[in-house]
Length: 109
Image (cartoon, rainbow, N blue to C red; front, side, top):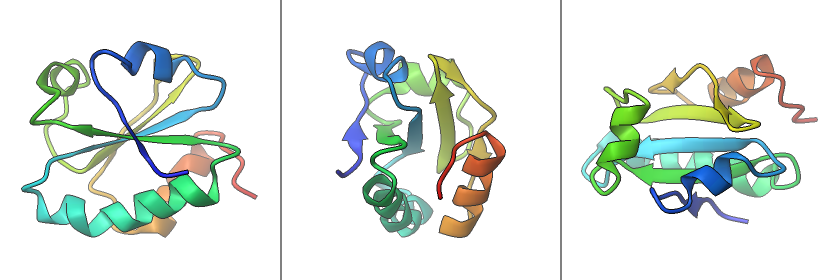
């Protein structure tokens, strides 16, 4: 499964789903966002039974970006049971993202 699009209309439902939700805050003009996007997409496919992956375009969903105080992109936030965890700002690679997920209690093995 690939990453889903998160909007104001569906964020409440998606953050309270049965699986944790990893959200990638990004923008189309952000070169670094485009560079890390394949790693995020691969995580969505590799861990689809343990994790839902979503993407929020901050240009289209400004209210959500403001709510979660997104100042730098890409920023990743993991939602568990409707609650946002500590953000990961400008991850360098997939390995760093996986370590961060494990630190938040996500079983990837």
